[in-house]
Length: 537
Image (cartoon, rainbow, N blue to C red):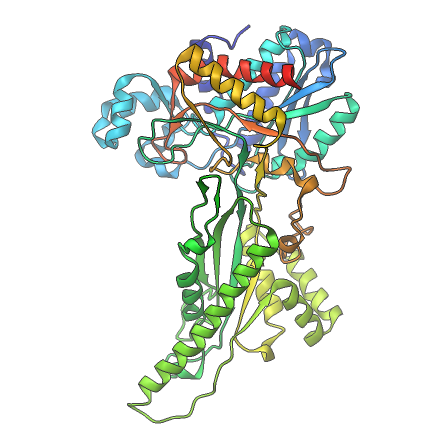
């Protein structure tokens, strides 16, 4: 076996990091092929070549599956991971070494005064590997490959199915396309999925958090957008129009860090909403005021239903509309002290995307609205999902000029449903036994967290029992470039658990992995987790 000792796992991790598999780049393809080549010459896969597959995706990338089956057992654990990473621009002068851990460590050592104090202390300890993906999440993938190797040598009384995917850091397209394949493999190989074991890293709840965590679910994420259409005017006549930037600013003021959106479940809390993108849609500078602006928010969920959150967002938009009207009226009165004039009263309408589409079809005719949409889709160019979604909303809004200033609520990809297996008997028993094992064996004190806070592909493993149509009905790209697994033939329901490595600063230039735990104790904890799941199923 090649991936069992701490040094062997370090070497494996370094080899994985050296493929700069940034989401959306050819590095993702290269790393998938590298892992396939690592496994295909193993004797197990030489004897069972149909158990190792590079699955082509719609966009030319691949996800990898590797099944180690122990006949005649049906019980199967899906080991899930992702091999893409975020970009490396934040590394600055160290950018060219971000995916070369040895060179990066040497450079940091020579210029350690540039490192934040916590990172400098860790560097000096010699216990950490630095580099993009070291923590999130190529170390988890490395340990899973170690478990797969143990399965190939007959260690487990059950089956292991490794599924590792690209694109988790952007739209999770790899996992979305993997779910129907998992359904097919279940029937093809006569498998019974008893659990999905993810190995995303532990996230600190605060800087210096000394706790270790095991997760029984994953937090949800919705990306609502607010398209604000005002009325254009010349800057010399500002009261003859309505600046869309004023409108979107009011939406931002009401929603940003609004704790009314926080959820509390079993002592866990979601952070409040925060803005991820806000801009007006003028392409060039001019003295015409902006008349279309957009704002996108990150909203995290646990148990809140799609219908409830949708109502909350609509209510916030309606409150913003009323405040905008009152604010304009007040400013008009203030200015009339200098010059008397009459001004048209503006009524700001609030629509959902679903309602906007109905209005556009009514105003322009269904065939014309459809023609415009088809033209927009045919000429998408290189626009990303977020900007393209906004463009669709903008084009439909342009057909509804008589409906006046408006705020349109819509949803943009990606969407992550929340999942929790805290009350699943198998997951409950496994977490209890793993926590006891880690304490007795290593003196490690694990704490259970119901919702993994960093977002993960576990979200797509329980769609079979979730209702998300309120979101998808108001998502312009749904089934026209972005889709979720749906129907009994394409969805699965699998209990989930996350046991992973320990590191710090994910998505930062100081990202790093704690080697003594991650490659010393974690492999034994992960092996025990697998055994516990199989023995108690």
